[in-house]
Each structure stands twice: as C-alpha cells, then as structure tokens.
Image (tube, rainbow, N blue to C red; front, top):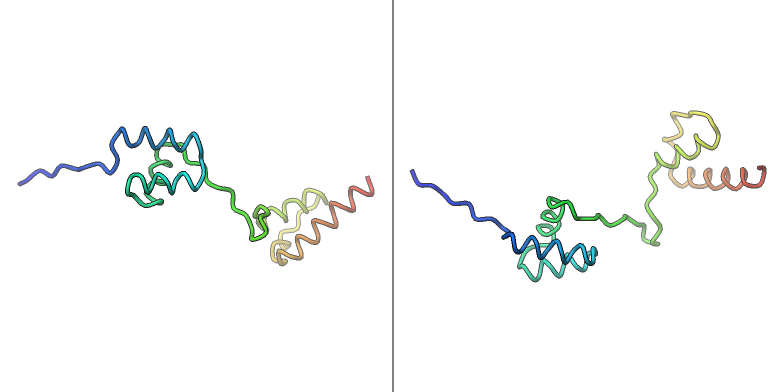
Length: 112
C-alpha cells in the first residue's frame, strides 16, 4: 500500500503574507489582488482568510447603496415602538412595513 503525501494549498509563508496584506486593507480589491498573486480563486482566498479568523464580510447593501433591512427587523421596530406583539405583521409586504415604520417614528417624534 502506498502512502500519499498531502500537499497543502497554502504554505505558512503564503498565509502570513496573505493575512498581513488583508489586515492592512480589508477590501474585496485586496482579496482579488491576493487571488491573482497566489494564482488562486477569490473564493479560495476568502475561505482561507475565514479559517484564519481575519476575514470581514462586506455589509450587504441595496442597489441604492442603503443597508439591507430584513422584514423581521422592521416588525421588531414596530412592535418595540408600539409596545405590542403582532405575530401576523410579518405577512405584510416589506414596502408596507417600511411605510409603517416611517410614520410611527415620525409620529412619535412629533408627539413626544
């Protein structure tokens, strides 16, 4: 029976250089540059940085650049402001929930 030697994808030197470069500038452009430099895919670089505990996921944004807000977060804001629990509120459309949050926040600011 032959013994197979497992060759690591990344040497210790590569990992050290990768982590130092990424920590200095944690952007998607840095990941792309590292992928090109080490002849790896960006997914491979991201996976290695995650395993090393240094990768910072980019915040998700909408087409307009605003942060993504989930319906559950909108429902939680409404319930907190009103002080009531409405389990079926999550069935409303996201657009309706956004309007409701906007009017509640504006209304409370004017009243109090």
